[in-house]
Image (cartoon, rainbow, N blue to C red; front, side):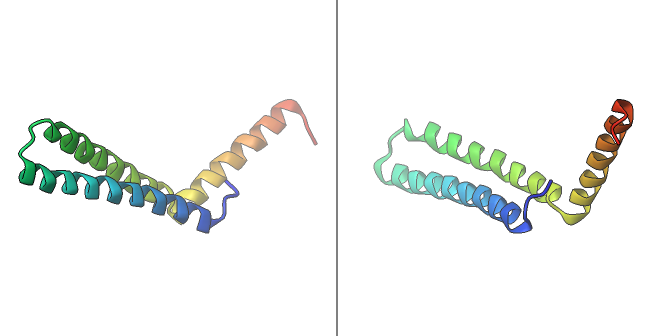
Length: 92
């Protein structure tokens, strides 16, 4: 849990960028499909849009997990676990 906050936000930015690329690719394929009228492209469009939706939900959950409040709670829980393990091992 010693990650720098900038690293965490860069990670979240990377996830958001991948979502943006998937949505953009799906829209480009959609417009190209309307121009060409190819039925096989519809599956690729749906896959990209579903992938975008899944990654968006993932990004939202990661943003929630990366909040300062949740990071502090995780640090406290982790420290309690370490202290408990040390007490069981009788380490000074």
